[in-house]
Length: 245
Image (cartoon, rainbow, N blue to C red; front, side, top):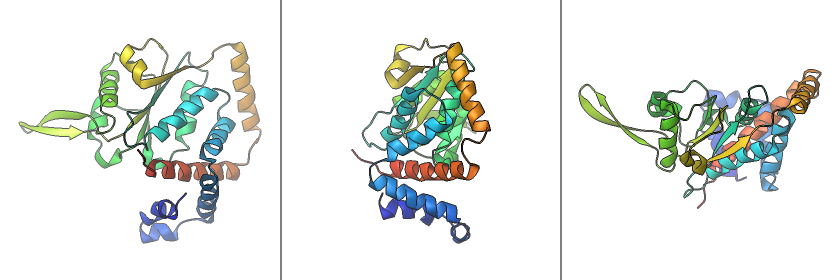
């Protein structure tokens, strides 16, 4: 991890924000530097995710690879859709990985087609958007498909404001992480999304309950979890700033 990228994280802050930087944040940056310099970014972030979400390793890997794809200047984008019955962790897996992304670049839930186009600075280039229980045939689903088609430059839309045509464009290199019950997506979606079907049976439910009980019993101290979260957020920040062809 280069000094410029780590410095960039703090250099964008105001003087008061710099003064408020905690010892925990400094330690997290130092740890992230060690991890990145040793080439262990994926192993660390994936390992933290697996502590918080039981199983579904292919889903976790797909989500992380989607992040990496955003940092390749000529990539067409990798998006992820987790399908399956409710209550077996498809949304949880997405949310747990989303929490490991630098907060500026993670937006989850409550989107309409209009918010994807009109959010301005609140929707920066390289943002990851979590969509829960999306229906591909809905207006939102159609809009998402249109945006994935213009991954590099952002999708253009012409709107009318005070009787004048106004062009608005989405952020560039948006990655969509969606959960949906129905796995019957059309060919266009299958071309652009990694589709992962979450296992749903009684054994899986027992495994999830066991994982939740271990977590509730203090399997990990809160401060340890917070530290790991901050390390992952620095690593994912660095990852998206390292753009290559």
